[in-house]
Image (cartoon, rainbow, N blue to C red; front, top):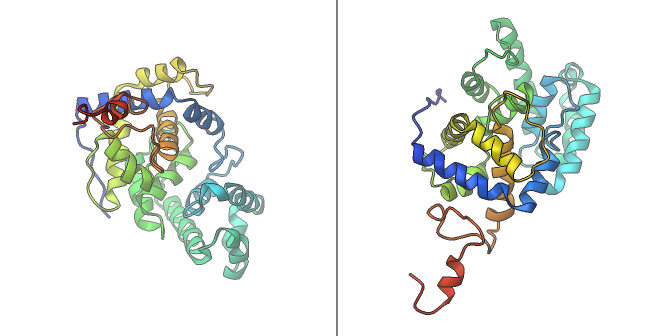
Length: 281
């Protein structure tokens, strides 16, 4: 992998993302999910204070479904209780017993081992992943290259959890690439690099319209805590990912098939007109 360079984002694309988020944020079911996960996320809880365990949690969430979130949380709590330093000393059979409820035991063991190697290497190189001056793009790229099984999407989540929800990273999972990007009219390259390109586009939109996105959270009554001075990247991520889960994974019959051209996204008049003879195009 090579560092994915940022490119200029079209103002029309930024406008389209803002309109889409506005519509998604207005949906009661999306708002409920965002409120339940914004200040203390079920996948990456703030109760875990060791950033190394947070990075571990992000990697171990791979291939874990929403139905298994309670099982996953139990495993992560156990790992946090044991402590990262202790986990690294465990034999493979001991680690396999710990992660067995999540499956893919060897993959998760390899992730832990290479994560420990990366953190040791960063320490020797004088790299502090928690430093406010550290470059997110460079950290994510290095993480994706050096941690086995990470890829860009896992690296994004790992650095987000380590640095905190409001560090400016918008993590992008596979469903956001395959389902949300077309809904937003975002053209992406093929392969793992698509996750980085989409992250750059979404982060550019939030950076350009930070006040506007903040206003949307207030306008639609989202009971969330966005720190003063922080760009609402975490709120935008959750709004988009829960819209994706609730309306695109199905997809929902309420979803307009003319997106991204239709800014209303759901519950528009297009479906009704298409059902009337002579009105369908």
